Length: 466
Image (cartoon, rainbow, N blue to C red):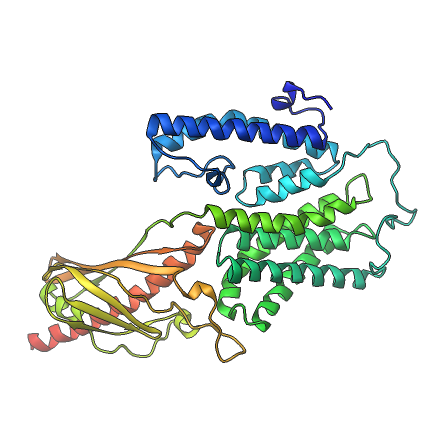
């Protein structure tokens, strides 16, 4: 075995497992100490090994908003290591006769662990060697217990991939109590890869067949989560678009492996999902930091003066039964608001279908601004389930309101612009995907309250104006 420095910048050629792993460890050690020294000396910031386990680039975990200078320094320092890492991955994939496009996983959060496991397990394969396949396309090194029929092979692929997803989901949510990239990206990717690889173990399959077994596996996994009371129907449906997309990408990776020129798939590759999933879930659990504070603002215009609107903002009567679809599906909805006291220090209770928000008033600027903190949050939803009730961990502390306010701005003609704002955070990743859902839900809650206040204020304006 010989280490060549040219392997760090040239993308052509191949590299075997041992040199790849040695270079990976050396690069990691150099990069860690470089980052640690730079951040400590220049910025006085401590740096941990766990900072590398999360983020869009394997060596980068700070965001531009949190620490712009540190981010710029780390990004600049990471570029040569990023080049070397991708070059090594391409060479290792080429030596294993695996698809080179798998190198893109190197910069994907959590999924990079799948790539590292694959490159550590896949043996070097000589393209000139014999292809151990029979004339009719049957593979020669498949375990005897693998079904020979197409239906049996598909059923095995769907069943094993669904069980893999179930075990991963239970481990991630019930044991680690995390709802992150490992659960929503790593698990479906691994099950898609596993399903396509198993279905193509005995005979080459079409891309359509590989995708089909992966997607059926996702559907079966969702049903199993409901049956074992791990999740409710609404959360399964909300996660479904992301799970389907990642399972399809995983299936494409598995299909690329089982249709490559060396038709016999090494048995080590069947172990990749089994070894990668604990790394995905565990590394993320060790590296998750505090979530970002998010803001949602909704506006309505009221045909009433701010003073008339204010009295219905502070406290309002019971709302009618909801007609909005999210609330009918189980999302918690506001019912009424009550207040104890007047001015800053008073305590407002906004009663929802699942319990009250406790909201101490911090700014009482009548009739312009009412701002409050939130010291108690009810559960965000009631799950649909075939059982009397389920209570998955994400109902406790994963979607939390921290502060809110009502801002009243006078408009010409005795009208008022009423704005409701909520500051909140959620501990579910990918953050952008789940923010699409949470922002829309909060907007729907805002509109229900603001439209009710608007109706009460305008009715009061009409009565007093007669």
